[in-house]
Each structure stands twice: as structure tokens, then as C-alpha cells.
Amino acid sequence: MRPTLCLTREVESLREQVSALILLNKVFADAEGLRSRVQMALAVLMRAVGASYCLLECSFSLGEDTFQSLQLGTEPTGALHKALQEHAQAARESRQLLRQDNIIAVPLCVQDLGLGAMTLLVAEDFPPDRVKIVETAAQQVAAIIYAADLLRREREAGDQLRELDKMRSDFVAMVSHELRTPLTCIKGFVDTLLRSDINWSETEQGEFLRSIKLSSEQALRVVEDLLSVQQAGQGKVAIVAKTIDLGHLVAESCRRAQSTSSNHTILWTVPATLPIVRADFVRLSQVMDNLLHNAIKYSPLGGEVHVRVRGMLGEVEVAVIDHGVGIPPAQLGRVFDQFYRIDNSLSRKTEGLGLGLAIVRTIVLLHGGRVWAESSPGTGSTFYFTIPN
Ligand code: ADP
Image (cartoon, rainbow, N blue to C red; front, side, top):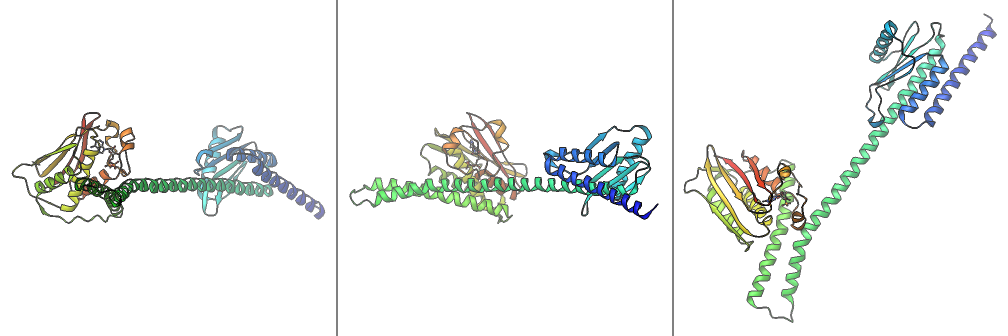
């Protein structure tokens, strides 16, 4: 062949390759959606190289715009179909371009990442210099798939950040609300007591001071609950187990609870002899205080709250029984979760962060005990926990 003719053919081939790639780029820039963009790019490529069939298999997770495989052209049957599938798999696994007769299989790779393979059915006399177009197109397809996946991940990360930010501001709002209520109450009563124009009687002063005491206890509880949850999250809730008198602990907690409510009657039953348990007195008092506080809070009409202690086989069981609003069965399993509050008109009115029962569960489990609840809406609830002896 004459050198000038050779050169002309080479230039012509290069021109064709460049225009096919320019067209591919345009397709990527124009079409919307990953699948349709890849589909159009493959159509352009098939036309440019005169391929009759194209199979693109993608093993990448691409969220909503995902595709596992794309086929264009007439799918071959029989042995050809089998050979095509085998080439696709071999190119994917070896990450190398494979050519045999009228099959060209190219891996889809971005850096070290294998994304799949693109396999074409071409004419038997397909010129070897055109393989470069197929290879370049495969690189572009891989890059576009990779970029789409990065974009999706970035979007997801953004969504997660926004969600976290919302949780953070909800949390701040919730804690501020929980602290503002008792602090406003304390300020109100202190201002009242400080009024120089009124001489309050001793009984009145005593009532104001009792209200101040209750509100400071409420604020302190919020802070203590938050601290306990933070310590539990960091695995820092330490249990200092000593031999304790559980009957005495229960009686003390019940008296404390009684002093906070004149609407409720707190009763407790402790057998004369109780198996000795080793437990953390302060932490177990926190468990009792939380359960009794709830029993009172969720029995808005008053009534009796009964604490029953009994020795069982290998453990001591404590039950806190109320006759309050109760808990719907579907929510019974979730009340021990952190920040879980049942959304009803009562819980909207009562203060609380949804941490009390999560703390109860953490402390009881750290003692090697069990904790659960039984309830029926409108009738009342019983919260149980056990401590091994
Ligand atoms: P909080 O009382 O601060 O909301 P808790 O973790 O102590 O948080 O309780 C979680 C939820 O379980 C409460 O919001 C309430 O709906 C429900 N609950 C807890 N104790 C009782 C009870 N004795 N009676 C009815 N509902 C209860």
C-alpha cells in the first residue's frame, strides 16, 4: 500500500474515532438520568463501530438510578449467547479487554475499582484499530457510573447530616423545655416570697418553699437523667455492688415518692425475710425513683401505687403497680428505648425526656437482672425488675 494512502486511511480512522467520542461526550452531557445516558451512549457507540448487540453489566450499587444490566440490539442465542456471557464474566474478573472472533469484552474500571463489563458483538472483520474506540467508550461509561454513585453517596451523606442536625436541635429544644418549666416555677415562687408589700403567713411560705423544692428536684432529675444516659452511652455507669437491704431501699423510695404527691397513696409490701442481694444502693434507688415517679405521673387522677417485693428462685422481684393510663400493647416493647415517649395527649402535658425507663433498663441489666412491663390501656401498668441473689 502506498504511504500516502496508508496515512489517509489512518487519518480517516482517527477522525471517525474522535467524532464518535465527541458524540459520546455530548450524550453524557445531554441526557437525563444515569440509565438513559448510558443507554444512549451505547447506542452511539454501536452505530460508530457497527455493533449488532451490546451487553453492559454493572455490579455497582447505584441507588435508585440503578441497573444491573443493559442490552441493546438483538440478543444472540445458543452458543454465541453463551460465549458472549463467558467473555463478559472473564473481562470483569480479569479486568482486561478480551477479543475473540466477533466478540469484544471490555472491563468497566475506575482506578482499582471494577464496576462491570461491556460486551459487543461486531463484524468478524472488525478492524483492530477501532477497538480503541470501544475501550475509550468503556472508560467513559465507567467514569459516568462512578460519578453518579459518588453523587448519590454525597446526597445521602448530606441527608444524614441534615437529619443529625434536626435531631440535635430537637434535643436542645426538648431539654430547654424540660428545664424551663421547673426553673420558671422556682423563679415565680422566689419572686413571690421576696415581695416586700405582702406579709406571707408561715403556712403560705411553707407551701411556696415546698413547690420550690419539688421544682428543683424536677430540674435536677433532668440533669441527672442526661448524665446517666451519657455515661451509659460511654459504658461508664459503674455499679458498686454491696450487700444491701432491698426492703429498706424500697421503703425509703416509697416515702420519698409519697412526699411528692398528696393525690396518690404509695403502699409497699416487703416480706419479713428476703434473700440477701448484692447491688448498688444509689443506682437501685434511681431505678425505684424513676418507676415510682412514672407511676405517679401517668396516674393523673391519683389513686394507689403499690410496690410488691418477693423472693423468687435465684432472684428478688420488685413490681411497681399503678392504676393509671396504661400503655397500648404495640408500644409496650419500645418504652425502654432512649427518648421514646408515647405520643398521647397525656404525655404531651407531662414533663419528660423519654429517658427514665432507658436508665432503669441499663441499671437493672448491669446488675444481671431482668426488666419488663405489663399494661392495659385505661387500667394501669406494672413495671417489674429482678435482681439476682
Ligand atoms: P418520660 O416519662 O420522661 O417520657 P420514660 O422513659 O420514663 O420517659 O417513659 C417512656 C414512656 O413510657 C413515657 O413517655 C410514657 O408514655 C410511658 N410510661 C412510662 N411509665 C408509664 C406508666 N407507669 N404508665 C403509663 N405509661 C408509662
